[in-house]
Amino acid sequence: MEPISKSNKSNKSNKSKKMEIATEPDIYMPSMDEHGNYVDKITSFTKGLRCPCGTRRDKVYKTTSLFSTHIKCDSHKKWIIDMNHNKSNYYAEAIKTKETVRELQLIIGDLNNKLANRDMTIEYLTNQLHGKIVVPTTTNLLD
Ligand SMILES: [Zn+2]
Image (cartoon, rainbow, N blue to C red; front, side, top):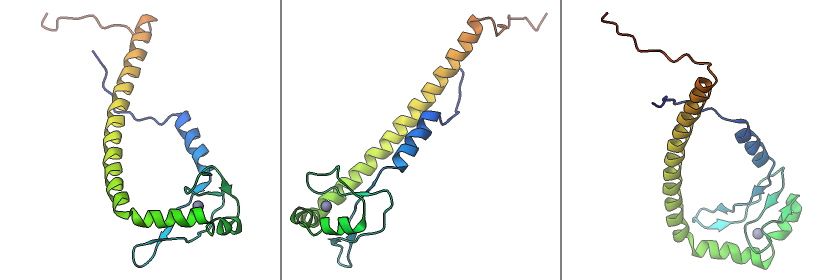
């Protein structure tokens, strides 16, 4: 016997994880020009900006002027050129990634349901063990 539940309670640790992410610096993504090429365009940021180019991926640029200096360096320029050379690969990768995310969401949803069912079963059995639940005895209604 397994109680069925579709409850999808968000727990506390989930919320604190989201708040952590909200204070993380943004990841820079170049814009696309009218020909579909990646070009540098700095948009405003408040929590700092990290650039995925080069080897110093963990470096956080605190101001737009520091970042505008960074995008003039050779390694950043080369990164933009490489991105434009690999555009079709990125597109194929993006489609694959989207599919993977969809599959993972289904798996997570299924695991969430199983976990919720187990939580309820454990709670039920624990209560039964401590005598909080009176197990109904079978009565013959025909008598
Ligand atoms: Zn860069």
